[in-house]
Length: 377
Image (tube, rainbow, N blue to C red; front, top):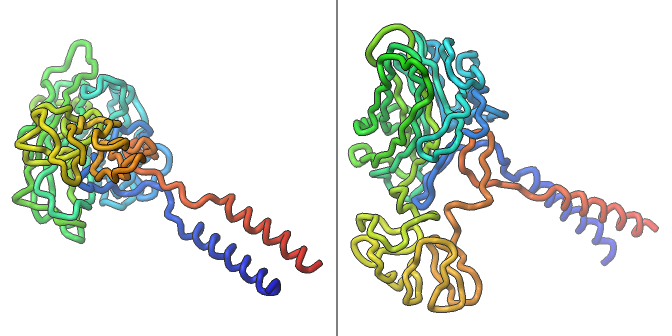
């Protein structure tokens, strides 16, 4: 029997090493809408160091973000920017060179806190017209017929030519070709024409429901949101402009199922369920949950925040879709705002994948070596 032990331990070590070799990496990856999450970017680590499908420090993942017409060049999704105008670095504003910049710090009109902008200084060859483009994957299990978009827009009115910023949603095929488009007219904005005597960053918090019913995004397909920029009125050089605090979700952000979510007030229209439970009627109005999955089994209403004691048993409701097991342990549901998430190089919300611990393989190999010497002795 002992003669077979070395082979057994060797097989276990090789299996563990194979697991480590095949474990997914934690590098930047495309974000997916699942129906209960919100994709968000604040560009906290962005330094305008370029775009790449394998981003390094200060870069954006080109599987997610690209820019078009930068020094008359377009970047495709999954491409790598090689022209320096895609990577002009950081600035507080007041630049004269056209290209992509990380303007920082700029107070966000959505959060009221300092942020870094994915920004541009338009010129004759850059963003006149041009665009920033965000690509997200539909992993909801059904066709997307609407999404909600929110972002902070900021501009520096230091020139006598205005800049127009708008939004489009694109339907694309498997090759990335555009097969449908929707213009979000409510998000059209133009900066002032006459330059300010004392230019300072100004901004607006932009948000809208985007109707995709005419261009439904199939499950497993991509939605592309285009942040267009073009010349407005006036002449000469152009104002600087940027975006941050970008959020994309399948539910209105005031009722998105993440803390702080609604607390029994009639904020939703009854068409969509709360992320933390179900509507008992046409919109939350202080009524109890329906009492069936994914609602609480107990008689009390889900407050939409974490944790809420479940009156039906000793368990705690996690504030996310899931059914109480009736035991004294926490629910098995997951929180769409996983506090273990990290930003990575782009300041986006994504779930960490730590992979298998390398020390385990080292421990197995060390133990194997000791055992083999004992067997030889």
